Length: 508
Image (cartoon, rainbow, N blue to C red; front, side, top):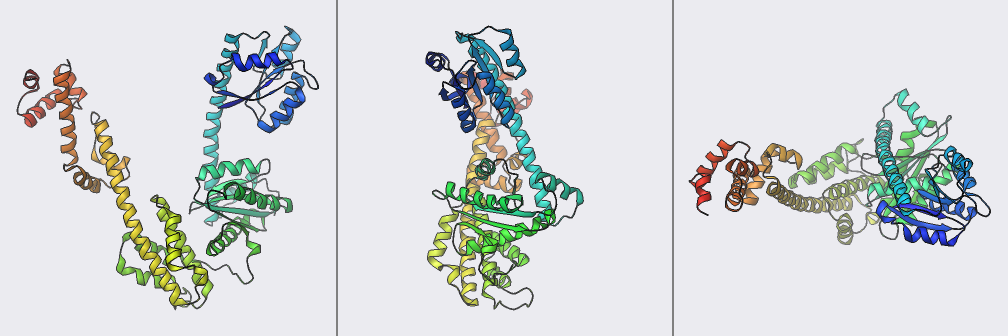
């Protein structure tokens, strides 16, 4: 719903507007009513209405002054409609100069004001649709730029673009706030946009699906980013888990990757401590180095988990917990913790992609295996990793089966509804993101018939129903049951029923 503010120093006018106009019909709701210009200005600042209906002559601040102030001081002023008892050319001229939507004379005519509302509603919705498209395109563009930088791409044009986005002038610090939560990504981004307000910050999503915020920092900016993290935590802490980390690095746009890596390391450390809230990289305990993940071994282990190859787990776990520099099991406990954290994050991601209950799974692991913070030996780390991967393998297998069953169910439903259209197994497989051969096998397992047999049976059932219950001629029955070619329909009908469609109709 769009918000409208009513401003008039005569209470009876406000009451008439409130009761006479069908606001809902045009997508509006009244967000406030005031009787003077100063009060109206306060509400416009606080509520940011889409539309303001205002009188001209009011105490403290006139309607025209209110409009002028809004146009001068607000980044996105509301639309205005003037309500006046004065049929004055000068007033109307001034209103038009200030880009007012309309100038209505009192007493207000119901039909006239509803026509104005219909036009304004359409304009606002068209503008909003355009803004939504523009915002999506901008978000995709920004996301691409930052992820290219994070992947190490060294391009002067790319860096210039990022400098312009963040309004950088030189070698300011780059700050990165990383947010990890199960809350819907677009909801988080919307809250960040509203909380950042006027100061420049750009959103992105990293390769693991975390929401991130980049900003060029001077000291006050650093405080603002920390405040952004605290405000987000206060908003979400009551109903979801949220962990955030802040990293910053000097050197201008060149420091983007380092700032991100610091934030990512701090986020992982926070996760290891089984804590939510926000942490700054600089606040990590002494001697916490930038230990790297053995990415090659982690990828192999995750592929083993996803493939369900139980016999390869032990070796893959050992490779992950082996120091890639020395080729022997790690003696550095914190190094092992980093590898396990990366493993947990990988398992969480796969569970989430299959709509699994991530928190419930991890809580079960904690109840069974304890906390990684209490582990102090290689053998204990190895046992933890093996138990975690075995349980993850089992859970992911179950989730895949459930998802596959659900997908096949939806495919069958789709065929039941769209059987009159030209349906091909290959196209259905693409639509439902499945392998065509596997879909064909699963479809037969679910229905007891091949896809083609099932589709023909559905079309024949419909053809029989139309022959019994409708006055369609044979060509119309053919078309409305999914057979555009009448001759082919007749031959198929004879093959499947042993008689011609006309003979079948005479039997009813």
